[in-house]
Amino acid sequence: MLHKLALFLFITTAVFSQEKPTQFSLVEAVEFALENNYKGLNAARDVEIAKLQKWQTTSTGLPQIKAAINYNNWLKQQVSLIPAEFFGGNPGQFAEITFGTKQTLNGTVTVSQKIFDGSYLVGLQAAKVFLEISENAKEKTEIELRKMVAYAYGNALLAEENLKIINSNTRLLERNLEDLTKVYENGLIDLESVQQLQLTLTSLKSNQSYIERLKKIAYQMFNNTIGLELNTGVELTDDLERLIEIYTSLAPLESILEAENVIDYKIAFNDVKGKALLLKLEKSKALPTIEAFLNGGYAGNNDRFEFLENSQQWFGSSMFGVSMKIPLFSSFGRSALTKKARLNLEKSKSTLKDVSEKIRLEISRARSDYEFAVEDLAIKKEALTLSEQIAYKNEVKFFEGLTTSFELSQAQRQLYTAQQDYLQSMLNILIKRIDLEALINPPHNN
Image (cartoon, rainbow, N blue to C red):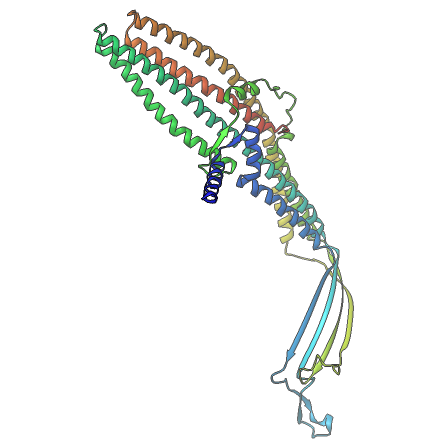
């Protein structure tokens, strides 16, 4: 019985430990996403593939060794006709003769080495550029992933704060309605005043239900973004107020203005390098290719399969050679391909200039949006303070009979709107700062 009880307690403890929410700060969420989000994982795999591709290209210019074994068995040997007079026969007649044995077995080993190949040299450079492109793509993916995590984290916190505020407003309004109902029952106010407050409460409860659903979806989106199962229990340890305090106190990023530091510029620049290599490749096709080889082998002949016997004779052979292939005339096909590659390179250079100008414009706009978001937060905070004061004064006046229920309802709705606007302005600071950092791509010290 004690063993069963111990087993039950062990299982219960294990289940509850598995259900314990996973805690994440924003920094921890980003780190977790970089290691577990499928886009981040695939980007890292692409870099590894590029490294292997680089070695694959390099290896084609290193010595290549090939071995071959050939076994032939004539089911019916080929017959050759030889003039019979060679063997003392009559002129004009032919003798039927078969050459060689019915079975042959030979093995060869060949070593080859490129001596000069222009396309190989270009291929080595292209493999290096391809690796850079993959690394830039990984960096771009990580930047976008940081943005996505910050957005998802912020939206989940916004849903939490929204729910706290609407729950507080609901409890306060329920108490007011309860007090107002008692006043009505004593015949001191009319029914319309109670109904007006009930209408406001109904609207508030509807929003409460909606926010609860939004919160669930926000957490599911957060889980999906960082690479967790949708319904995994998580706890966010940062709060919106703290994050906004951090993001509004950061340096203004004035020192990082060069477009060359932006990942989109690096990607466009790598495209120029790639197009330049394609042009070089087309030019290299007009150059000769030189390759050397050395092979050696043994051959055995027999009328029966006795190649494994000690009596089998083997005849060795070896050969060394150098081959050169010289392209002479391609009916101007190579010329057309070279001109095409040159035009593509010019297009790529023009695109790079356009990307550079657009990046500078985007940096300027992103900085302006962030600065406005900071200013807007101060305005929304002031508006919230005023709305709270107005709502409180109208509530006092209403219970003193100095204002109507309609005016009280208006003041309450104005307060609810100001609360939502303030929360949204807080989230906007987080988003605009993340957008600016993602664009400028400053170093991250997580």
